[in-house]
Image 1 (spheres, rainbow, N blue to C red):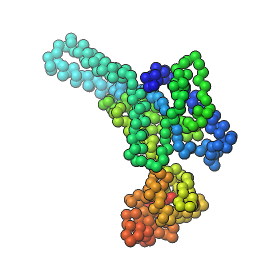
Image 2: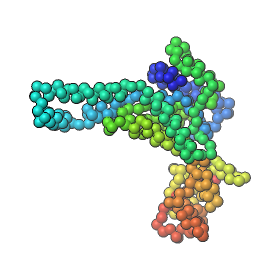
Image 3: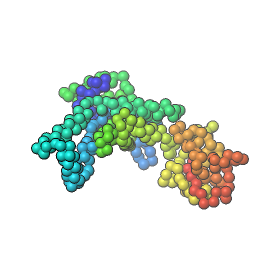
Image 4: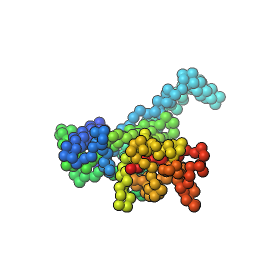
Length: 345
């Protein structure tokens, strides 16, 4: 299937992605009309609890930053100084002056030829597409969240869709029923990094039907660079969203976050308590802090970092580093400290 995809012109792939996005938008609007999708208070379509992405991720090659910096990264006087040094070195080695220009041109052509061969070989886009999926799966295996929030949509009639994409004479008609389960598409660009040491600079874009767009970038060797992007994608989509609701026993708790942030900072627990009351919320209790910390950042909770002090109502502080006899302590034990907090209701 990947070999078939390589035969499709890159411009046509991007046009097909635009067609998918347009279809996703109209499907989302249709779902909202029927009341099947959630609408946020600001009128926007809410992000789905699980993001299903189109399985093909095309990568287009961008500007060669290595050659660009090689040509423009130095002043003309610096380039002339380097050339003069090369000429002097050749003369010291006994090269006749009439052969110096030919030798310099031969060396320059050899370097350009090696870069041309390395840059013209196909398959970089296919490797990056596979690497980002493998890297994302690896992060999920390592951290093992209870529910996965990013998945790749794999419909049964995928071969038929690819056949239509390859046929320039036919207008691709996307089935709304098929697109109903799709949340968005991913695509990217890559270019040779300015370091000229075999690294590439990769940017991955994710566009969702709800209107949200996400962009991730990393630089490194081709076989390693996507690991960083996979971690970025995981942390962006898997981390706890604010606001969100979770179940604690028989009751439902809404995580509101802090005013203007997810995790806020305050000079005192009393200040944090006032900030929560201003948004019709409150600070978590000890049991709520503990339970949400046990859930962790990837399962709908918030990890109570042991390097932080957490504000509680009644001018009390939860200090995970001081469990004995109790992590809940009066604020007087922590003069001049900063306190982290988030609000619930």
